[in-house]
Structure formats: C-alpha cells, structure tokens
Length: 134
Image (tube, rainbow, N blue to C red; front, side, top):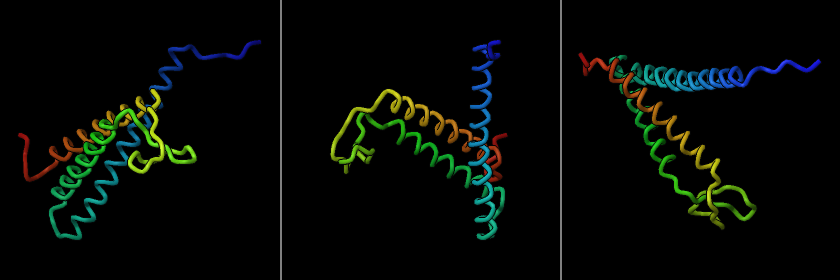
C-alpha cells in the first residue's frame, strides 16, 4: 500500500504557514527586546516610558533600514580566502561572482529588513506621546 502523500497545494500552504510563523517570531522577538531595553534605559534615565519606547523603536527601525540598504547594495562579487572560505571583499585573496542563490538571499534579506524597519518606525510613531498622529 503506497504511503499517503499530501497534495502539492496543501504542502505549499503548510510551508507558507510555517514561514509566516517564523517571520512573526522574528518580528515579535525584535519588538519585544526593543521594548524591554527601551523601558530599562528610560527608567535609568528617569524619562517618560512611552517616549523611551518610541525612541527605542525609532532607533531599531533605523538600524533595520540601514541593514536593508547594506544588504540591498551588495554587488555581484564575493570575496574568498586562500582556503576557499567566504571573506570580506576588501581583504579577500580572490574575487568570485555571487551565485544566483546568494543574490536571491541578499534580496530577500533586504526586503525582510525593510519591512521590519518600516513596521518598527510606524509602531514608534503611533505610540510616541510627543507627536500625536490624530
């Protein structure tokens, strides 16, 4: 008797659900750690906690957007060391073209960092007590 195989559409839906769960976990971890660190720094500085969290989210969003720029601006060349390992292009012994998988990964990472940065900045602007949107 052949083993039961899930249909391709069910498999792809399962993969998308797992990917969404991982992305939400990443967003939640970054958001939660940013809020905790901001609250601690705000308490230590004796400042408003709402404003401290908003500034922390602004900073985290700016760092994510900067990472987006760095990942998105990478060129098609990668550096390799003398033993064939990856190394920064400025200190590399040899230079090679990036594989299509490396280029795709860099683009997807840049998109993820862009989305993360925008979400953090928007959440920061919504909760910022110094600047009300409405």
